Length: 263
Length: 263
Image (tube, rainbow over all chains, first blue to last red; front, side, top):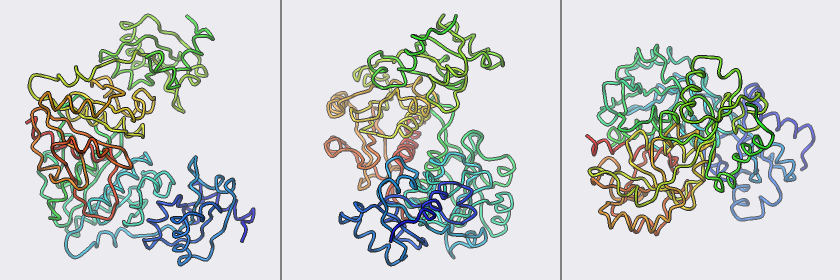
């Protein structure tokens, strides 16, 4: 099965945000990310790969597993793959997957017991967003609400930086966070916000069984309106000269205290 | 004073690692980084800026302060500045500074009381290295030893991501870490290394007054030889599905426990 020019063009358009949103699809690139995807419930629609990719054991094994998900697996030239891929050095394989859709309600419903939700308010750097999803995935967060002003979830740089987290976690995009946080409070969530002037040091927080933790924008943090909805403001004390911490690092530090809830 | 073609060419070469190392100089770009630099003891050699940059209050004030550091301040066109700058949208000002040189010995000498040193083994991503220096700068680390296989410290992406940390901290580059760690131990440092299988959870570490904390490469962590020199292996427990944490995030989590040493 060869790749038609029309199909190649179609795949290339998924490098664009507009096409991703219109079609509800996105690209997954490289061996490692596709290994994560194939072990999850990701809906893979089609796969293109180079001849060389299928020649080693890891590639062959992945293609075999992908074959149980879709029949649309097509060999392409390295040049064709390079035209589809976002990365400089395409790793021999790209797949098209359907974006998974979750609702705020289903995420907030959570589990019967402990439920930890993270809300991200206007995170603008793809690497930061991806890294925060990866961190949430490490610390056992149950779901993520992504506010309206955040960078697009299915941007290839975000997808890559999640290191598979996107396939493990329920992430709702384009959320009205003021509304969602109000709903969460009505459902019994306690709301925590990171704030340099906060009254609780991060390692002293006693997380509630239902916890919603909000992180904000790289430059201006969490919006004042959201801060006002919080039950507790969490600080990370400074002992040096830096003006601020990277938001992804701050997220890691605050979430690292969750272990006391899970133990 | 106008910019000669030869000078423009000279400044452009500082975009290259080879020239930075040969000349012992590097570029500092943008209002914010130069505000940090001018308040530090950074040796600024020359400055180029656009006409527009000097027109608003913040720009004018910065140029005034820079004038106390160097007489070589030259107006250039936006196009000339764009040719020197590493960023897509040059922010109207670029300076050339002399690289500060520190020795392993001077960094390990530290202060009389508490002395916390971070060693970075083969960190390869510029954003990660910059972010880790920024984090060290937040938590009051006294100095950084950068191993031989790490990305170059004065890479413009690293400089930017430190958010000024490069000007606040003593960072030694191109360090033989095996040798440096042995020296540190002889000087009474206790050595900590991050390791998924470590015996001490990060929030239980009792840091010694002289502490050397090692972080490793994005993919394979700290080298086995270095691990063997460590007195204590520090772990961050996982509660979710992610395979690993970003190294910059892990660094933030481990360093966040330093506050108990400084309190």
